[in-house]
Length: 382
Image (cartoon, rainbow, N blue to C red; front, top):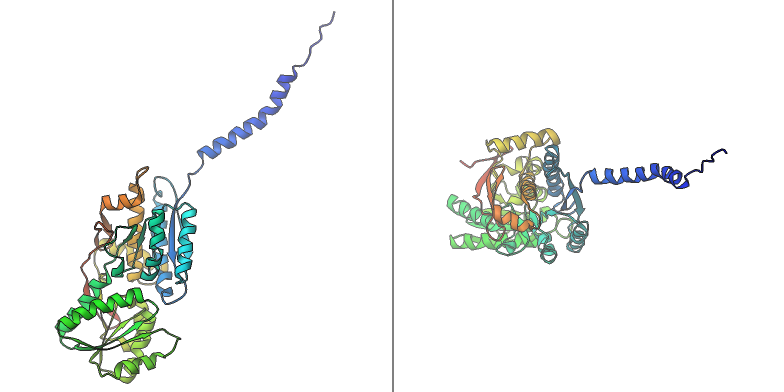
């Protein structure tokens, strides 16, 4: 009798499913072996308003630092991703942007550059324990706080005191008129207060203080007229590079001899480009040496110049330092450790021009010095 072979339907069914099962397993393995989640850094910046020119160029320096990190393997093999939010100089929008970035599970933040925006987002940073490192928010109102805000720049109080000391010591600025940008009171008002206290203590007199906002009310020429009406021997301008340069030009149309000094806010190459001959002899206090021969700075300068075709300034210098501080801390961070704790435990970071040393409140104190515009350059005073 012929033997009948009954097919093993279970085996056939299993063999039919094997390719599908294998495909699923293969996909799971691929996912498991795939690239890790990127390290996300949020950046609060702005492309409109009175800080737009410096904030756009600051972003270039931060992106360069991130790209250099990725080119050398990222952070423990994980790629670094920069998530940018444009606050447009609006405090309410900045708070929303911070919360949105936190919802996207960022690991750290850089920014903001503006002191007023930094003050507005501070409660949210503390609420969510999100650490940020600001390049240039230098208002003294941000100093001495046990919070999640760090900065790599000196306080404006140190710079304004140095400005006052220098002008009094020089002897040709005794009766000064002050013009300041009314749209940034958190920077301007503490700067004026510190300057005024030191200037008065050393025998100087402030003859007038005028707040201005471009395109709102008085023209630059009218501001210049109002400043010179009190017959000062000198003028202090606290504003961004463009407004400082334009105001210098209008002052020179009326008076070619009055001495002019500006705040570090305006100390960029744009100030020189726009000011022309009108800014020759203008002085300012800064904590960055544009002519530093230090190898670390010169390498940064070379790379920045090749990449963006213009010389770096303070608003590239400090943002690059801030990015390097954040990247260094993220590399050193251990599981379960807050970034704030890492920053404070390291305490001392390599900067482009020496060490960046944080105190217990995330503030730095760095020596500042005076510069003068001579032959279209930031030069040492004689």
